[in-house]
Length: 237
Ligand SMILES: NC(=O)c1ccc[n+]([C@@H]2O[C@H](COP(=O)([O-])OP(=O)(O)OC[C@H]3O[C@@H](n4cnc5c(N)ncnc54)[C@H](OP(=O)(O)O)[C@@H]3O)[C@@H](O)[C@H]2O)c1
Image 1 (cartoon, rainbow, N blue to C red):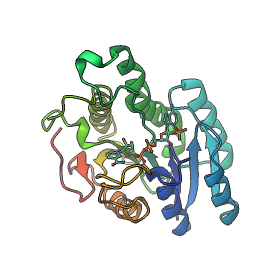
Image 2 (tube, helix red, strand yellow; image 1 turned 135 degrees about the vertical axis):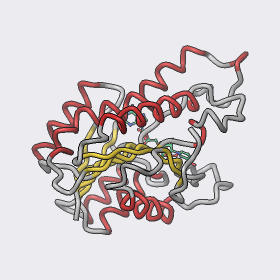
Image 3 (cartoon, rainbow, N blue to C red; image 1 turned 135 degrees about the horizontal axis):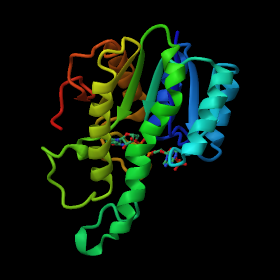
């Protein structure tokens, strides 16, 4: 049994919500963070009283993240796993340079790259109290790979994921000699997390279990690749 924090969990068809379901099914205690009320999560909570805690947290706000960490401290006292799943993309994400409002990039990076690290910083005291070696999994994307970049769009999304990868590697170095905390990032694969997207091959509920199992194989592995795919293979930075 473990205690898990998962961010961005309010949409029932998306990855975060389905990761919450998978950990609850294991008997784990889950802190599910949202930035606005989620009727789906509230419904799920009825099936898991005392096991599922809903935390309101806007990862773009240091104050909000710190308040959520203080609440988590009172609720659970320690954490064994953080899955930084929340992310954003601007309305211009599919546009190319001439049509893209460049002022949308910095706010996207603030949520998608700085946001997860705000969470790590604020929740670090709880991770330190894990007792089993805490793990931080940042959900990145192949879109954050500079080496494999082929797109002419995703100016915001690609940049925030590349920045998240850099921050993950930097923190991996920081925690290298710390037996209590490990951190890596993953390209989770192309998942049907949008009701309009029927092309993606991976079902969010099925795939959440693949990811859950993958995360456990990496808890104490500080020597392996830091940016991996959902199969556990290294992905180029
Ligand atoms: N789906 C794929 O095929 C795919 C591929 C590669 C990588 N990924 C990555 O996998 C993860 C999950 O993907 P997804 O498609 O399930 O994501 P999603 O549907 O876009 O969900 C993102 C979540 O992040 C939350 N969020 C946005 N801004 C936030 C903020 N400031 N503070 C707190 N939460 C915030 C959203 O909350 P609201 O509901 O309130 O908007 C939403 O619940 C993401 O990191 C994504 O980049 C997905």
